[in-house]
Amino acid sequence: MFSEHDEHPVSGQRERVLLNKPPRGRLGLSRWGLLFALPFLAVGAWMAGIGVGVYPQQPGTTVLPPWLVAAIGIIFFVVGLYIVAETLRGMAGRALAARGRDLALWRFDRHWSRQVVHDETGWSAYRSLAGAGAFGVFVAVLHMPLFLEPDPAKLPVMLYVVLGIFDLITAALLARGLLLVARRLRYGRTCVRFNTFPFYVGNTLDLAYEGDGALADLRGLSATLRCVEEQIETWGHGEDRTTRSVCYQVYGDERTFDTDRHGHAALSFSLPADLPGNRLLETPPTYWELEVRATRPGVDYVGTFLMPVYRASAS
Image 1: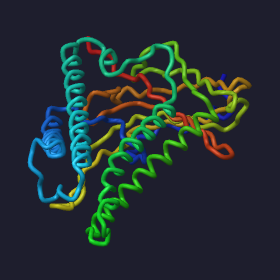
Image 2 (image 1 turned 180 degrees about the vertical axis):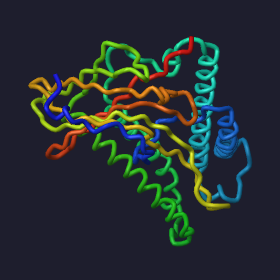
Image 3 (image 1 turned 90 degrees about the horizontal axis):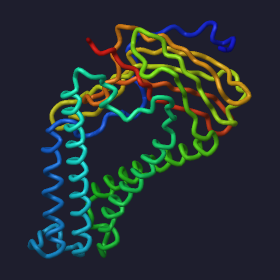
Image 4 (image 1 turned 90 degrees about the vertical axis):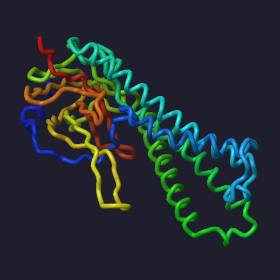
């Protein structure tokens, strides 16, 4: 049963809204990712070769110990390998989806569970902490000239500026990861369950929200179902041009609901027939997600659930 708050839900919105959220799309979903990886592989192999003595020392490497030069080269080479792996993974997925174009798209773009979707807090915490650790190792290596140079004042000011920016990025990733860990420890692993799989635009999305004990007997939680389109945008001109992936909400529908003594609630949304379904393999992707929020003392609850919403296959 729906709570009294559900009698007057916010109607679906078609306004294109810029979302302040990290993009879901991954690197290297086209063959151009291989070209992007080449400089990392070449520079990494070259510097690692200098560090182990395969190649002669260069003017910028003589002040550094060989092991540090080799470590920097290995880091660059590993980044290149990661980009190559992501590129090949994306190309393989798209090729598989193209071969099965007459079958359901949901079979190819994600390994779905047919009964349950868990919130992404734990996975997001892992990514933030892993990113902080990996990026922190890279930044720590870049800090070595500060300790190895007898007179750090001789080092260029720009080096300190760049290292300061990198330190802030590392701190931000670490802080976000710790916040997500605290949220997961307080509220547990929440989920949504459904009897129908997948959902198709033009139909109704019915699901059961299952919170943990910390979310039991709460009033006024908000649930927003949105269709998100990511877009690659470029700002500036010439050398000042920057490119990044941004997220737009092209449709949103909100419900306010209460939970029972177990932290559970039923939710239902209409899925307009003229909207796209998930296209997670595209670059940039399109997808549906459900976001549940509750304002609580200390750490607020936020649960994000990727929804299996698709367009029916033409047949």
